[in-house]
Image 1 (cartoon, rainbow, N blue to C red):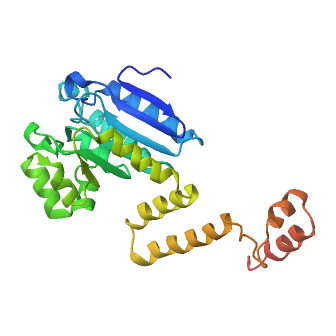
Image 2: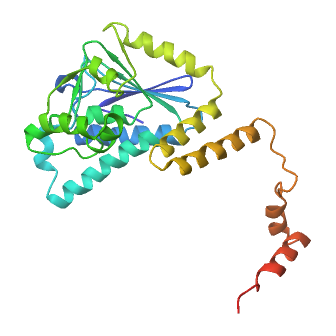
Image 3: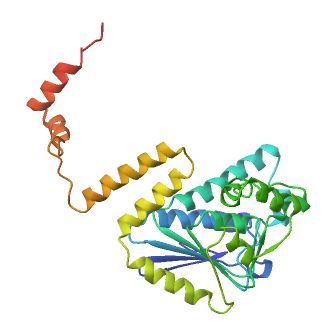
Length: 277
């Protein structure tokens, strides 16, 4: 697929998306956003990719939505639809069954920061800056700046970031558990490759399960989250070879349905009219 505003690359089991509007600090135009959605869909459907790295061209990650285009967004309903479109983009990124890395240099503000919050790992340069300055444009964030941000850094700090609109150091993002690690300005790509090397050595199915249960568990009560852990433990045993359970069907129920054999006839015969009066 040909892209105009991003660079899409594939290397072994890793896909790379580079936001490529350096002249405007990789601001998210409507066109670029559409291309990000398309690239994420390519990666979502692929089974060969295990990892995704997102970065920005030039010396910046992304400064968020292209404000100059907002007059073209339409009326309040159109704006609502676009915000939901961007939310779906972030949700699709967060839900990928691949491990995702945001490689941040320079500014990651507004929508740029929202992209990082949907990724599994964030590595940033020492010169990086972040924040949610929408308040000074007279608008509010639409796809993570109040929701995911509050889940990462807490309600009070999320209010500080959104209501004041200041830009903060990468060091503070690490201290506040928003990003993982800072590296010297010239070591970003090298650190990403080192992280990928470690991740490639892992049990990939195990990492897929861990990502899923952590993402799901953090949004629910403790007992429900523990349920995900238990089911994941059972699945881990199954995919590692310990899948046979003596009183499980082991596929006989599905086969029986297709063949309409004795097992199917017995089960349906006992169940279909039971307590129906």
